[in-house]
Amino acid sequence: MARVKRGELVLTEAETFFEAADFARCGTDWSVQRSLATNGAGVRWLAQHLISPRGAPPR
Image (cartoon, rainbow, N blue to C red):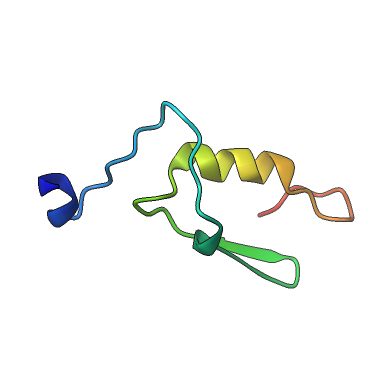
């Protein structure tokens, strides 16, 4: 709990974690934030799997 109170991210990059509420889509653009429930591995995993209808990877 002390790490959370200091604002440090508790998740490691060992496993993929993401919370859908940390992602938003406006048209073809995506916004994402890292949080206590979303780590970089989760962001990278979704970026690999969310391909636009035109076949271009998300920005």
